[in-house]
Image (cartoon, rainbow, N blue to C red; front, side, top):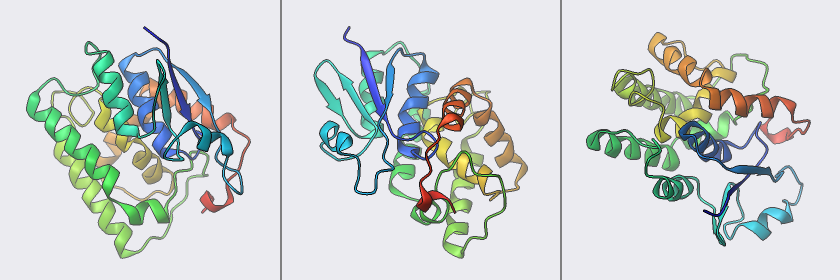
Length: 215
């Protein structure tokens, strides 16, 4: 099989890059990653050369380029049907995809007010009612699915659903946005996953600063 190459943005800030990277890493898929910085004032022309959508992440495989996070995961899941990207139970798989799609489409207030920044020195961020509404909805999703299947993650074992909510875990943690014990237990499980730790270690070594993402 041709090798897989995943182009990602700055690991400290790129929430969309984090999602497929964690999903592939947690599933045990071999791939090469290459950082394409997006902290250029006028945008990085290398990204535009890679991606028709002008965004990262981008997966390159056998002459094909895919530039949307969920599409990347679904493509690789088809390449490796023996890998565990989704829950084993059909109903849980359906709900895991629902969770991912809601994550993709929603929570704009949270994204705007609390950008992902893994190096942020944990401190409480004051947020408005719109962000609080997003937080409540996310907690309802997590508390409704965490522990299903006997594991600490949303549907038992770590799956794509957890990878897609991982940047939210980072936001909740960095800005100290939640104190619910069940939510914190789920966050701890995600932060202690080896894939999370590997990504966070890379992020900690990055020297670049994006001022607009430094709240």
